[in-house]
Length: 367
Image 1 (cartoon, rainbow, N blue to C red):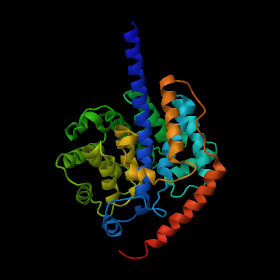
Image 2: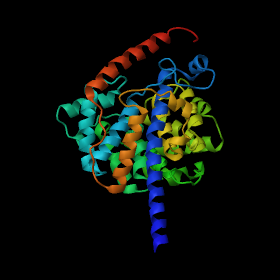
Image 3: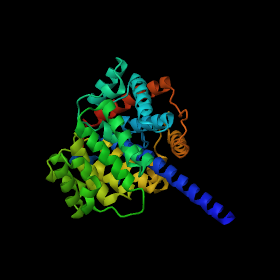
């Protein structure tokens, strides 16, 4: 009996450790992709090669990186999950409250769909009626953390992704894309090999009545099976100037990379950034998916050491993830770690100046 109890305790501890590592890896992977991709946002693959021909590194501010709204939204999702205990209705109400105050901190680079939705929330619209008619990337960039949190609980995962998506985006395509991201993240949590040939069995549920999504899955899977580079995939699919903010374009590139590098965060993020276009969002999504599989210690540590932000620091995000894992195991709602909004506002004003400085830098060669 004693041996049985010891074995049970060890297995439970291993499960808790694995769950904690998945959510921590997902959030930090998202932050790394976001911070590495941020200095190159909106420029072409060709210009990125000219500006940074060698290995990618943190470079936003004197060799250090900062995060943008992509990571902030994943943090908001984690906070809302902790406060709600995973209950979908409570999750939606808490996330809506946090998005209102997040907007008040003047975040840079906010998407138009998310901006319209946050304004509607301030005007009193409930969370299930605040979504804008947009097929942007917003729901996708905060879905990997949900996949890591819910894991194999399909019902819970799908309910949470639906709520998270509809708060800001009412277009069904945005929600379908977000469901695929969360599902892919959950699929990769075990040690099984991910096969492009099984793309339809993995994600066919959301493509059943959507021919565009079905064709996208087929193209991404075939390209990955042929071991085609992400950049060549973009060229072949009319994305020579980079990945756009349309959710299906982003999803195609993300899946093509994920199928080939689902357990190699540095390579996956590097490929995502070198495609050009919406580099921070594409790399953040890929980083969040791969990070859930690899855990914190599978992430490139030289990038992580140079990620220097505040008040959402690496240490703060790790503590948030520990709290989220404990909440998932206990099922008990907690008061999540918070961000003092005046501090976030001061940080964002500085961040805007840094982003503007990068904008002026792009006017100079090499072109």
